Image (cartoon, rainbow, N blue to C red):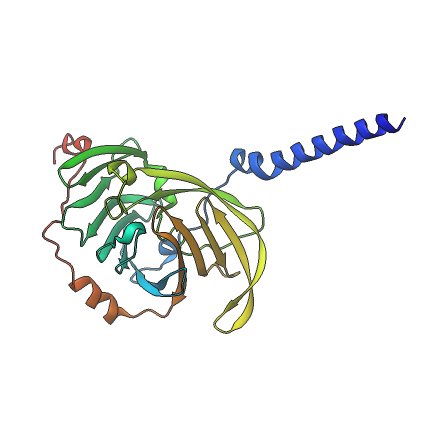
Length: 294
C-alpha cells in the first residue's frame, strides 16, 4: 500500500513539475505579445526626448555612457543612440580601444516601424557599419560592412517595432505587468571589438523578454518597487511609470556591465562624439534598395 502511494505521489510530482515547466517556459514562447509602446513614437510635434545612462563594470568603475536623443517632425521621428565605451581589460592582458557606437533610426510615425537604420562603430580603425531601409512589400534588407567584408541580411519591416542593441537592450518600458512577454530583436555592434567575433556578430538575434515579478531596489538613495524584466543575458529594473533605472548585461569576453539612469549631459555627449574620426563611416544601401533605382 505504501509503495502504491509513493508511486502516485511520484507521478503527481512529475506532472506538477512538467506543468510548471510548461507554464513558465513554453507558454510565454507561444503567447508572447506586442512589445511595450516605443516612447520615442509617443512624442508630440516638435517635442524632444533625451535619456542618459552610465555604464559600469563589475567593480563599479565607470567605463562609458550612452545617450539617446529623439525628435518628431510631421511624418517621421528621428532617434540617435550614442554609446561610448572606454578602454576595457580583456583576458590575457589585452585591452580594447575606446569605441563609439552610433545608431540612427528613422521611424514612420503612422506605421510605428523603422523606415531607415544606420549603425556605425568608430574608433577601431576599420569601417564597421550596418545600413537598412524599409522597402515594399514589408521587407527590411540591411547591408553590413566590417573592413573589407560585406553582406546583406534581411528582416521583416514589422520586426523593427522592438529593436535594440546588446549593450543597452532596454530603453523605456511602459505599461508592464507581471507575466507580460514580448520578443526583442538585438543588433550586436561589438563585432571586432573583442577577439573571436566575426561579421556574423552583426546579425539580428530575436530574444524572448519576460516580466518576472516585482522587487524592491535602491535608487537615488531610497528603496523603490520595480518590475524585474529578464531576457537572455540581460536583466532590467523598471519603475511603474516605465523608466528603466538599472540594467545588467552579460557580454562575450567583456563580462558583466551595469547601466544606471543619469541626468542628461549634452556637453559631455558632444565632447565624446568629437573625439572620433568619421572618415571610415560608410552609407552602404542593400542591393535590393539599389535595384529600386538608387
